[in-house]
Image 1 (cartoon, rainbow, N blue to C red):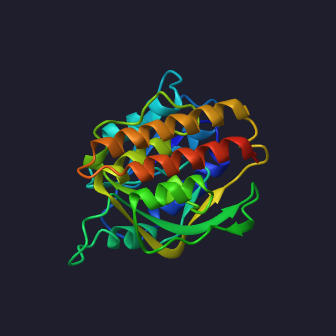
Image 2: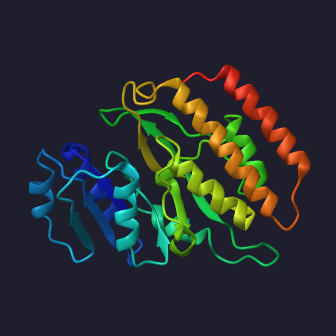
Image 3: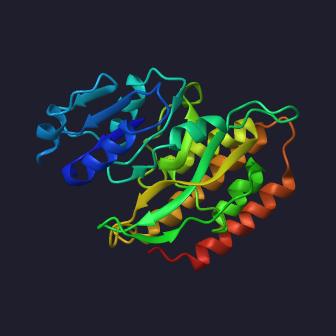
Length: 259
């Protein structure tokens, strides 16, 4: 469980506690303190837990560089990136790892993700995440995501560490996480959904609107081209998928409202 953090000592405490409270026993929790100027260092220095690895950055890194620092330190078979203001329910890792269990007749999924809820700055639940099918082809998942029918949040996505050899790309400002899970999903072909509320995703006021709408539009188009490149590399490319996805993106681009 990787927790990159910057100047969020008040929220970091509950994020770290949720990670260290997992019922799954074989975990490491990596916190990369991105040269924070608040009480983050003092809090992390107070923690004593053999499962905890603290990385203190002396200069401010970009978001993706800090994520990649966490990834480089990870030694586990699976990897989950938990934002410093989000939370995991105690059974989250145990349930997500269970999604990778081999089922006869099904390929190993590219990713396993779960349900959860959105919380506000005070921690109060504002809504539940939309449910998904228990197992879904990557093409269907990605199309539904662009159509707003999949509520996938990266803090609820468990990936195999070996699938992250390409690291987190620095070419995105806001959609780096989506670029990663979409690439991996396309390369493996399927995703598994755990229909349990296992994460609490914190949405701050104006969190989305703080980024200019043109950035979101640009990166949605980048994601489209990424997915189509992966589809072209597939054993059986699907021209109908490409045509449909382009039409979806055009519709999203016209109707996009961030908030």
